[in-house]
Structure formats: structure tokens, C-alpha cells
Length: 254
Image (cartoon, rainbow, N blue to C red):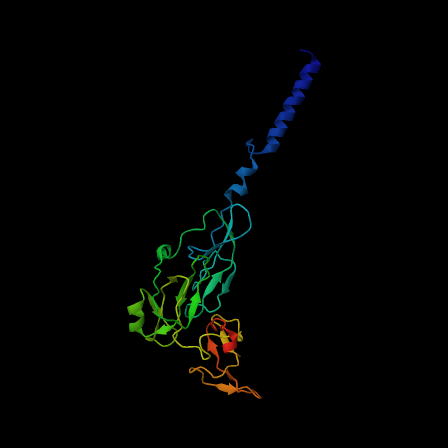
């Protein structure tokens, strides 16, 4: 071996030794990006534990986006945007989680009975009817009338306490699945129909009927004559909380 070759070999040995010392612990494992923080990142938890009134977004993406429209006493810990529900069903208010969540499986229902609802109404009539924010056909309804305990327990499978002193009245928690939630218990002050109804945006709404009629309905308490009307026409000035009723037909009979 020539002196030049020996010198070159010696230099290479020193270079390799220096690289090994600079590396430190000698770990030469090549780590892929999938072995790092991305793999250890925990999956986001669903903003709800269970849901009866699930809604799927119209966005054509996969996994799809879901939102739970259940009204609850307290949102799940994973919910980021918990908003107050209008006209909540619980004492002290109700809340809805408005988060959208991307998942293949939105999770189980909270109320197993919703899978086999009875088509029979638990109530004969209802003034404070509420349509649930679900999208089946026919729709789902709940009656929030305050009843005497004996009335509620006789008609409903489940009752809850109404707001106010305890013990007091009860509210039926049963859900009815059908197209017709039934008649009102308290008659509308203007009768069964109205052409000129004015209602606020509450749920249920408070309404007035400005129809000019030959005579007010028997249930009207504040019946006033329209000025300068000949023959005389009348308007019921009462307010009513609930649906104002269908349009009167034919209009000429008013």
C-alpha cells in the first residue's frame, strides 16, 4: 500500500469518528412524519354524548357534518358553542349546542322510545303545543300545558314538574308523532279562523286578529265597533297565545 493511500484512509477514519461524536447518543433511526406528533394527537370528542334530534349538513363532504338540536339542561363538556334555547323546556332555561361535528357515526339516541313512537296523542287538547326541531314526516310534538298531577299521570307515561312552587302542577313529557297535534283547549277569541292575523316571533306566538266581522265570537272579551262602519262591523281586540288558526273561507262571510 502506498503512502498516499494510507494517508487517505487515515483521514477518512478521523472524519467518521468526528461525525459519530457529533451525533451524540448514536440513535440513527429515521423517523417518518407519521411517527411524530400527528399520530399522537387525540381525536376530538363529539360535542354531545347522545342525540335524539340530529341534523346532517347539506354539504357534500365525507365524513359528513352533524349537529345535535336537542334542548338540554347543560351542554356536554366538549361543546364549544352552547347557546340558550328559546322557550326552553327546563326550569332555569334550556340550552342547545350549535357545534357542527365531522364524523361517520353521530352516536346513539338519548331516548330509545323515539324509535317506536305511538301515533296516539297523550292529550285531548293543548294550548301550549310545541313542534320539536326534528325533520321526520309526520312531525313530532310536545304539549307544555300545566296540568293537575292527577290529569298528567292519567294521560302521560312521563311527567315533570312545572315552574313554580313545589308541589305544583305537572307537564307531560310524552312526545306525539303525527300530522295533527289536536285542538286547542281554550278557544281563540275570534273564533276558528282569521284572515288578518298579526303575531310576534315567539314560540308559541302571541297573536291578534284584525278581521272586521258582523259580530264577535262568544269567547271575545274586548269587542269594539269599527268607526263609521255601516252596517256595523266589529273587531276583537283580544290577544291570544298560540296559532291564530286557518284563513277563513269564504272571505265574504266575514
